[in-house]
Length: 129
DNA sequence: TAAATGACTAACA
DNA sequence: GTGTTAGCCATTT
Image (tube, rainbow, N blue to C red; front, side, top):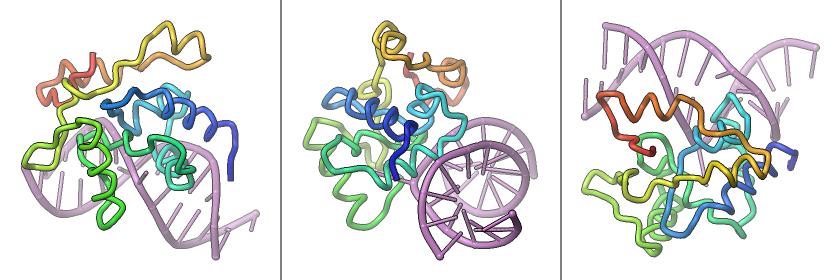
């Protein structure tokens, strides 16, 4: 069922440029959610007229297995997204870097310290900013 | 109304 | 690097 949260998430997903990816956590944060699982729920029920394939998990991998997972990967590769041998993408290269002005102008929140913190962490697999 | 479920994440062992 | 735990919240039974 569609509600405002889903609408916000969908709008964000549609704003992701071709060849870029983002994470459930980042989307949720920008939409004002505290729970990333809700983003997954929204994706689960999302219409096919949106680039849902550009949303992956924080590890840089595709969360789904089976046919849907391979389809997602195929779609991304079709856009130029490169997967390493471990099936992960490089956020520094294909990670979506949303424009702060655009976000605020559309009523979204800026990416929280969550990601800045991660970028400076030793495990810096999420070097988004 | 209560319990279970899920395309998640962070923290810790 | 992997495996487990807890938290969180919308949706579905």
